[in-house]
Amino acid sequence: MIEALRSDEIIRKCGGRFKLTALIQHRLRELIVDGARPLIERDGRTDIELIIEEIMQDKITADYTPSGYVFKQTIGAKK
Image 1: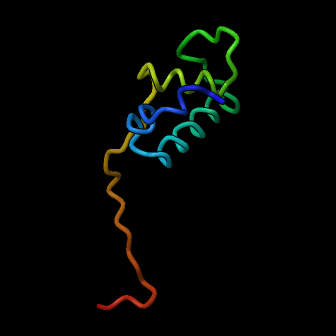
Image 2: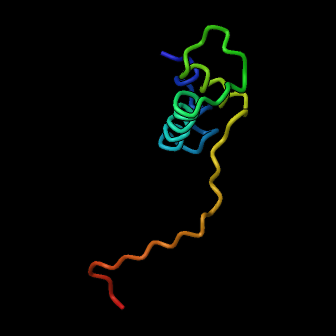
């Protein structure tokens, strides 16, 4: 198991477990599918280990700014 995942520091850094998971998945897709280059030296690390280290070094973060999307509930909504 990746040691950084045992501490709550990385979870706090990302704003929760779900956001951490989403960030890892997004970055993994960038590396594997899109062919993005790692932001740190690989040094024999797996993709997941590399991503965790990028997060820990604040090389990648998630953008949580408001998108402007407004959820409109239409089924059974009162007017």
